[in-house]
Length: 606
Image (cartoon, rainbow, N blue to C red; front, side):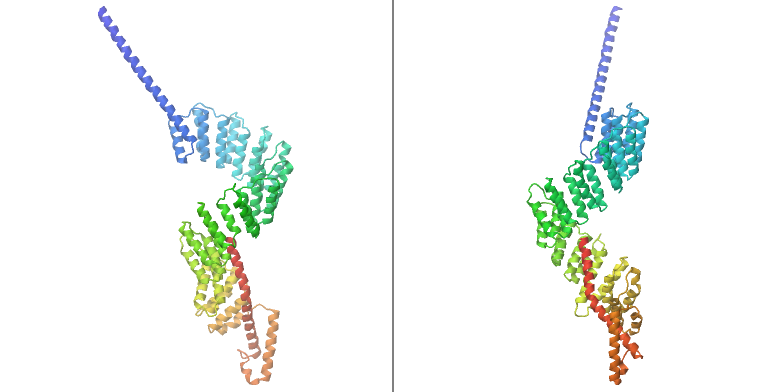
C-alpha cells in the first residue's frame, strides 16, 4: 500500500507540475498579448501625432476605438484634438460619453478640447450648450473655454451671442485677458459692426488690458473691407498713443487697404512712416505697395519700388512680386516679357493673372501680335487661358484697329471649352468692328453683316447694349444691303427697353439704311424721332429761305423744290434729313471717344 501511495504521490506531483507549467504558459501568453497590445497602442498614438492624410488618421482612430485602447485623459485629448482639426465635432463630442463609460469623468481640459473642435466648425449653439453642461456638472469653465465659444459665435456671424458670453464671463468673475476680447472684436468686425468692435477695443484699458497688434490688425482689416481705408490708417497712427508699436503685419494691412481703393500717395506715406520708425519691410509690403502705385497711375514710383525690391538680397521674390512688377511695367512690354522669362528661370509658375498683365502691356504698346503670341505660349505651358486673358488680347487688337484679329480671337474664345464670352468680350469685339466700319473707305458689306450678327448674338445672351454699341449696329445696318433697314427700324424703336435714348446720329443711320434700301416712305416716320435742336433749326430756316429765294429767281426749277408736292414741306424735310446726316457724321468722333470707354473697361478687367 505504501508503494501505491508513493506512486500516487509521485503521480500527483507530476500532475501539479503539468498544471503549473500550463499556468506559466498561459501567463506568458497573456503577458505577451498585453505587451503586444500596449505596443500597438503606442504605435497608433504615435501615428496620430504625425502629419498624415485625414483618411489615415480616421483609420487609426477607428482602430483605437474598436479595440478599446483609450484608457487615460491624455490619450482621449489627443484623439479629440485630431478630430477637431478635421472638423469632426460630432465624433469629438461622442468621446466625452466614451470617457464616462470607461470610468473617466471629463475634466476641464477635456471639455476645452471639445470646445476647440466646435470652434473650428463654427458650431456656436453646441459650444454654448457645452458651457451650460460644464456648469451643471460642476466643472467651472475658464477663460479658454469662453474664448473658444466666443470665437465659434464669431465664425457663424453671431456677434450678439459673442458679446453676451463676454459679459457672462465678467459677471461670473472669470479672469479676463486679451484672448476673449480679441475673439469678440473679431466677431463684431466680421459681422460689419465696426462701431461696436472699436468700442470694445477702447474699453480694454479701463479693465486693465492693453490691446495688442492682433486686435488692431483685426479691426483695420474689417475697415479695409468696408472701404474705410483712411480710418484704418488713423487706427494705425492711434496705436502709438496707446503705447502699442505697429509691426510689419499691421502696416501691410493698411497698405493693402490703400491698394484696394487705388490710393497710391497714402501708400507712399505709409512706407515713409515705416522707414522713420524702423519697421522692417517684407515681400508682402513691396508687393502691395507696387500694385497700389501701379493702379494709381504712379508708374515711376512703382518702377522704383520694383528696383528696390530686386536689389534687396534679403527678400525672396514670389509670384505676387512678379505680378506686381508687371503691373508697374504695364507700358513696357519688353520688360514684361523679361519678367515672364525670369519667372520660368526661377521655377515660379505664372498663372492667368501674370500672363494677362503681360498681354495688357502689349496692348498699351499696340502690339497685338505679341499679345497673341504670349497667349499661345501660355497654352504651351499648360496654363489654360481664361476669359480675362482673351479679353486682354481682344483689347490689344481693338487698340491697334485690327478688327480681323479681334474677330478671330473672339471666335476662338467662343469655341474654347469652358470659356464663355462676357460683356467685355462683346463690347471689345464690336468696338473693333465699329472702327473697321468707320475706317473703311469702301462699303465693307461683309464686315457690316458680321457686326450685326455679333450684336444680335450679344442680345440673345441677355447682355444689354450701350448707346455706343447701338450706334455701331446702326452704322452696320447702313452699310449692309438686303433687309438691314428692317433691323435698323427695329433697333430705333426698341432700344428704349435697354434704357438707351434715341439720338439724332442713330436716327440718321436708320434714315440712310432706309434710303439705300429704296424705302423713302419711312423717312417722315423716322424724322419725327429727331430731337429738336435750336442750332439745327436755325440752319434749317436759313436753308429754307435760300431755297425759297432760289425758287423766286428760277421759277422753272420750282418743280424740284422738294420730294413732296408742298415745296416748303419738302424743303423742311430735306433740311432735317441733311441735318441728321451731318450730325451723324459729326457724332462719329464722339463714337470714337465712347470706344475709349470700352477699352478702359477692358483694361480694368485685365
